[in-house]
Amino acid sequence: MTKEQPFSGIFKLDKETKNTVRYAEEAENRRPVVGTIYVDKYELPRPFPKQVRVTIEPVE
Image 1 (cartoon, rainbow, N blue to C red):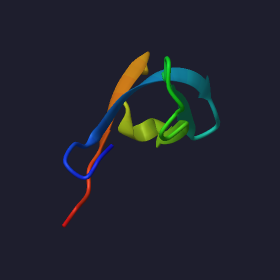
Image 2 (cartoon, one colour):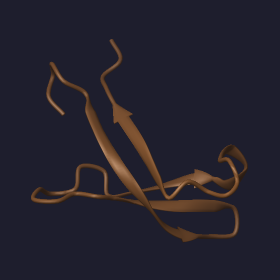
Image 3 (cartoon, helix red, strand yellow):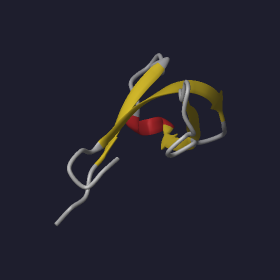
């Protein structure tokens, strides 16, 4: 992510916990920017997506 460009990354289904689904960042040839994210199970469609895209941009 830069000041001019938002970060957009693909996260792969990693693990299910009791109330969440954990996704791990797919970071080939670079350091992970975010690492892992946890998403509430009740906010995801069933079956859970194998991949999700996350975009981070500054709010001004």
